[in-house]
Image 1: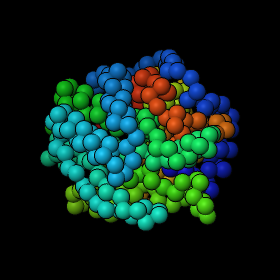
Image 2: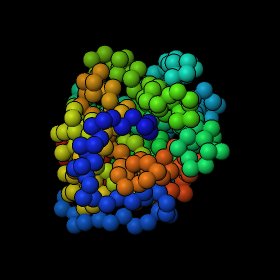
Image 3: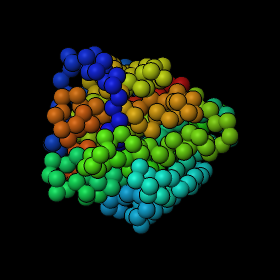
Image 4: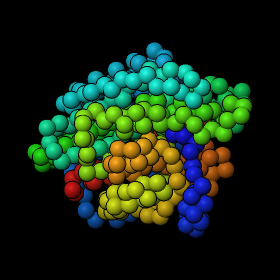
Length: 337
């Protein structure tokens, strides 16, 4: 997840000043508070399974671009989606990083029921940050991160969604889902690069895909980006760019979460504005897409939480309850369409 919070964030902060949200990543996984459930639709999302998928990615080690671990993990992700009956497309491209490095990028697209005309898109990034440039210890700034939350968590939720959907088979025959794992998201300008402000080079894989979709004329009803959806103490606000381009999709997700009793985790107020993978999808591909992303407005180290772009973004701070709440909310979205 990149640093690109734009100037409109001040408005969002004013709107959320009444809420208190801790950093949330400085404790072990704990019980997620739930409220009264009203309507539950679709199959059960298995948080243990999602957690295992998250760990499996992390077991490859850091997965920055142009490394063997990156390639091995990409193959594992593609094979997993295929094992759940998805048609897998690998979109390869050579992309130029902020410093001129050529990044061997692979966007992984997994199609569930590919012939269906009506479609919804889920997406996440699967590469990991090459540098722990937000770590409190400067000695760690050039150390690659494990990226358990910032990368692996979103992919793990999508994998479990694909698994439960393929086994449940309760969706209409004319309805399909696309799971897109974007590459080259997290090679943006590091904070320690002299003369740079940290604003460039982010979300290159989604930008490329938005200009070159895997199918001509691809237009799902909407998209949902899942980024940093496994951390302890996570809260999910209506992200600002999402609100600007796809407010109605925020409405759908917030209602689904409330119906499941997760209204204390999904905060129905505008949070920060983030330049994430959904930005190009909205502005270039013109697909209304929201970003479900953890937001910690009171965390001094980062509004993305205190493990963001640090060596502490590990499985120790992944909470099954968070994964389960996000995953079940996405199931609810699908089965109440």
